[in-house]
Image (cartoon, rainbow, N blue to C red; front, side, top):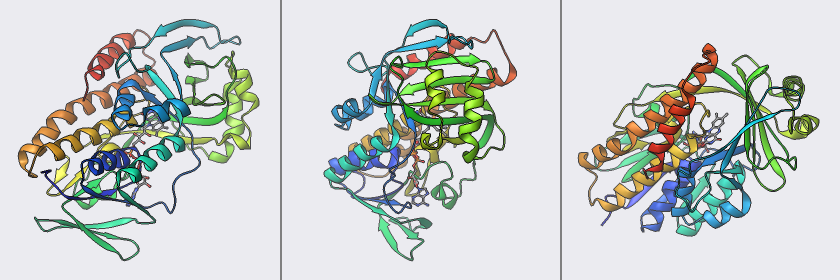
Length: 374
Ligand SMILES: Cc1cc2nc3c(=O)[nH]c(=O)nc-3n(C[C@H](O)[C@H](O)[C@H](O)COP(=O)(O)OP(=O)(O)OC[C@H]3O[C@@H](n4cnc5c(N)ncnc54)[C@H](O)[C@@H]3O)c2cc1C
């Protein structure tokens, strides 16, 4: 028998839905509480690395992900010149195994929809408009209260409620994300024909100019700059100004940077909660427990891995014991910390203008670690 029979999950993002699927598949009663009033339908793109794809395959949604997204296994490097001269095309390490591409670009709401549908199919319930505001653990169960005056009691509560996690605060963990000094403009635009992989340009007016195909017809394009106070509505103008320095596909991307391009600006953050990630019968996973700048595009991958490992432990132990929590910490903390530190380091080298940084060395050691299943 599993360690728990009845689990509440706060947050219907990548971490929460992944945990819901694995647990509901094992016959555990799962209720997901999501504060948004309805499923997200608009958003940007996401780059999923092989180790994330491995988990999506375990969830049984790989076929759908492959159909909707855009897979590729090389990385292009371009010069910050008017032609966007291609400097190198590098073979990427397939961290999810040789049967999966190294990378998959997707439209975020599409990924969420695939996970949501699969979670419902597995028997989980997902209730929207439920904002968790309080938690009470009596040793034998945990009761959550929600903003609408409701409450519910579970054997275990999983806080998968993202960066500014209310669950993290409610269980007394006072770690908060801090900005790393960089900010990113992202735009969701039509795919120029020649964009068939991510190409990165280092230098020019931005630290990084890049893009990732998200499907046959779409890409998301991004420009990383020094963090500053920016307004989303200035996005089309500012992105077009910054993008003017970049060539190749950027010429066509720039023509599409209008009000329809769903442009937004986000500052990069970082934090990590030292283990254990539980207090009594409540545990945090995903961005609630750690965040990193997307310099290696690993945030969602770490969220999926957290959920997969937690579900594996909950279904293979028959009690919720300190041994289970120690195993969870042992399998997750160092791996997540290594990803967070590497992601921050890559950004810091750019902020400090370090020209001889061992980027290939860092990337190789990170990929070698991520190749081993979580
Ligand atoms: C600019 C940027 C680009 C990124 N690009 C990538 C990338 O390319 N690849 C990658 O792997 N990662 C990327 N990431 C990181 C990735 O987005 C996150 O790591 C991932 O979404 C975390 O998933 P999560 O489920 O933990 O949290 P979230 O996706 O944030 O989900 C949390 C959910 O909890 C809900 N919630 C919050 N509070 C409450 C509450 N009190 N009650 C109920 N529900 C609540 C929220 O509404 C939300 O639905 C990027 C991050 C940023 C900032």
